[in-house]
Length: 406
Image (cartoon, rainbow, N blue to C red; front, side, top):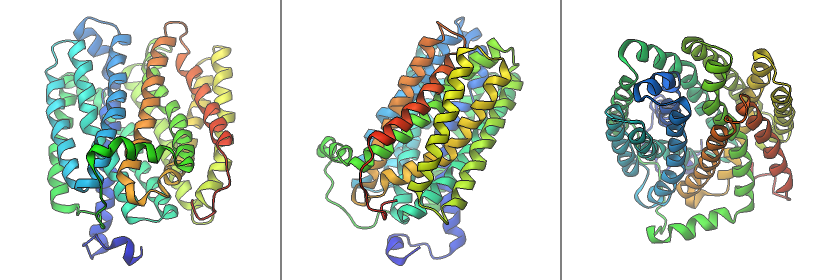
């Protein structure tokens, strides 16, 4: 890394710097941990509140919309006040609302509290991306995002398994006590290890947040990569929302078997994200996207066919694994492309791209919930649609961009 990219980074030894990158990955993992850990508990939550799993799914949709709105709140704040202060605020909100979720008296309260818990959790997403943009070139940042996906990929492997056993032994409310403790521990480590990475101070005015976000959205390159990555990733959230209903209720998986299945699919995205890191040594992020997106479209078509013929479980699992794995090639490169030209407003750009992704995710989550009333294969239909639309978006927004961008 060049000296100019590390001017604000006062840490001199590489071992501690590597540890900081791991901390960024853990910050990014807060949201998936908060999502994946309680998925196997859907039936237990429904039974406790004397409702059905469709109602419990709304707590997940509320979380997605909280991630959408919350990231816009942190965007210009991180550019004005630095990276650490807004992060402390977000972690405080996360800890308090996690404790409140553990005490939620009914499903309506849980839905509302999950919305505010997401507003706290998304601070880590926005700030981790902004820090990566502070320190890395666009090509190198794609490799770092691949590493972040590696750590994030561990969450879907371990979180459902852990959440299932916690639910069996201590009840589903214990899950929220555990994540609140993790939030406190993370804040303590950040105070000790994470330096302020924002170097040059830019003239950022909070009252001009809307104008700043609009300027980011007018960047055609930013919008192309953000929408492509967000729509592709929406298939992942369709899987997260619809998989408990499909695999536990339609295909009669036990919560434990479902947790293992969820973990097995996460192995694919981990492997392909690390393959992406290796490929970036030889090819640009844009060239990798040009190949991986058509693959995603073919896989998505396979999911649509599986939904149409009402395929048995293996007919769903094979294209599902392929879709989730291919996201390991698509998402880090799309993220790097979106932030490539946003140095002066990295926090705002990170917030906008994250908000776009989770707005799409929230709409898709609600769509899965609605379509599930019409067909048991709602998840497969939605995934089959998202991959194809992502490719169409990428092609329609194509324009001549300098090779140096990504």
